[in-house]
Length: 247
Length: 197
Image (tube, rainbow over all chains, first blue to last red; front, side):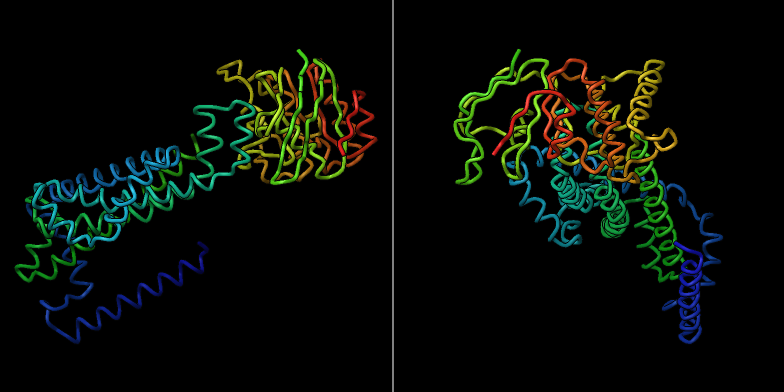
């Protein structure tokens, strides 16, 4: 991104914040809408809240675990489905179901079987898995058959074949899918926590803030979720790119 | 061991590329195949490489280890020339790897790939340079049979001469089948001729 683009985007953010500040001043009802300055001020003190760091760790740990499981299973099953088409057929109804059923329905259904504590992991997994699986499968299916023939003639096998022939061809599919799903896992995971309200989670903190009409806290926690989500996505995608390039 | 092609039939739809065709390729020999487009030159190479299957007939005596220059370069575009060649060589580590890389560099130099570009991704190479990397890859491979499909395509006259010299030098008595359109090039290999119609 060039310097001018960064400036333009920063300008757009500033305008949006000014608009928000103006709206808060006009409404003048802290319960309905707090100003960005008030949210910023709350962010400087919210870390002193009891259980702040534990809540962040709890939510981070569960969502990231679900995300990584989704990525792992998505890759594994795509590789198997690419090799044996009957696996793709077998998985088809599950993938379609997971993709079409609303997250909220899944959360409520899963609450019957799972403890609220582990719900966000499972929901993150459900959101991530089908997208990783389908992107990986598309990547594997669009590999250049000419390179596959070359590898067969020269008897290139194993790790060399994976790192020099397969990975470069599927890298963009995998990185894109991981980038998209990282944000989705956080959205769905936190939504599951709000419905399940497991003790010591960010979801519970958000729910409590809403119950007490503590809008400062509600928005401050939301900002923290956004920071965690974006930070995790950037870090994971950076690590993934580095791993795939260096492999 | 000679390669024996007996009563080969290869069809593409209703069209017969080969019908009841027989041929012997002598062990350690050079066979230069010429012919018009669609005569089956590349098909024959693909059958020998095991990339295509005949509809009838047998092909016997094909060694397990094959080195091939395909009609297209088929390089791993984001890797360097050295890495592309190393891909088909036996895996080594440590000091041995350094020796192998040095050998690859010497081969690449022999076909006119300058040392300063040997570590650059081949995606930035010209068509002629890519062709030469594909050729070095095939010639350096641990192969008993070399299949070269128009190895000098896209090369200027001077480079072609340099490359043909390299091919003959590196053949090292291995059985070689070359497809070419150029009569002059065909004469340069000094093997048996086969004209496919």
